Image (cartoon, rainbow, N blue to C red; front, side, top):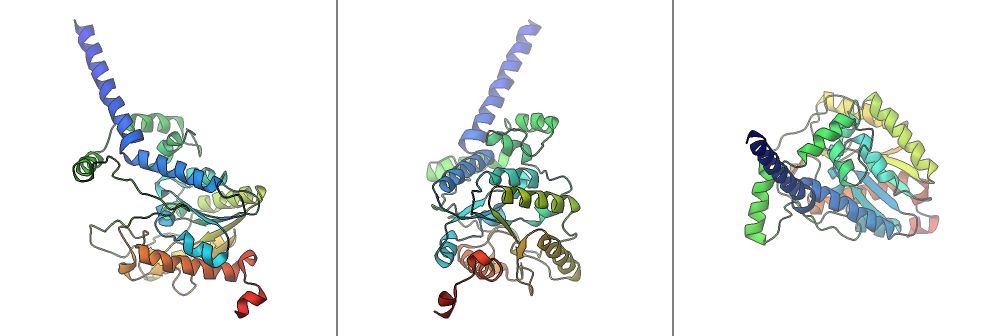
Length: 314
């Protein structure tokens, strides 16, 4: 009798976990959204059969770029390959490296958590690798893989509530659903729900991140591409500590590859009206401004994008 009851409870628990797994991975959970977005961007990049600019990073790239603006100004296809900074530097870099073909420019815009890491891993590192069919990507330890696999069967209460609201209001499950443009840009603007405060950067880029980015530069070059780095736009503090750490970070990155940023502001913005729901995500109108800045910096710093003499006089 006891064995039957135990078996019953095991089967019930397995059924509940399986339902949670299906929800998280295939229906409406955040992992599902991230998996679908990544797959969509891979497909969009594969449609471009000529040298292109690949803009990579976390959501601070996904929600800050207008690829059409950049493409029109530079005359080169631009694909927005921003995903999520929570996947960690070790997973982010190899997940975008395969998209580099000879003649491509990889424009990497990492958020500061990616640059301050001591091991290159983060909360979503293990689950993202599993989502895209590459478990262990980035050197995720086996015990982390096992732990995150079990967590995929446990939906968060917040996600379930939001899914319920979407079903009632819009008849859909994917709260995190984010239609993309043909160049991979985000098309939605998420409003901020909390009060603003200016973010402080309390340390400079880690030695680990410098080493990993140098390796990435070599890997991109080996595939026939060119790596360009950029400081992210950030709604941040202009206190001395932050300024010094960001400047030191810019200096260190410049030793690896051409690094784009405004030397006066260090890309630290003080107008919160430019930003949507986070210190990195821009409103749709501000994405145009950010993209125009990147165009000007690429034209000024990267020979491949410098205007010809005839174009400069027009």
